[in-house]
Length: 79
Image (cartoon, rainbow, N blue to C red):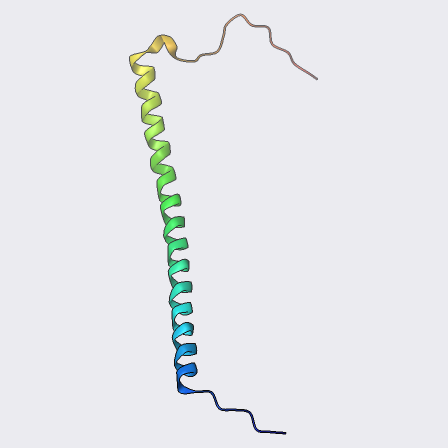
């Protein structure tokens, strides 16, 4: 058997560069995913607070549109 050929310095440099680019790329994807998760978990309570304030303000300024239970409605019970 013939001994395996040695890799050229250009090939070694290219493989090392591609490995470094892959590591940086995976790190950027992981960081982007983490930032997206943080934004989602942070934005939800803020959004719910804004909606609550809008609903409360709307009920205050237009009380005739406030949803309330109807009166004199028959109820059904089982058991």
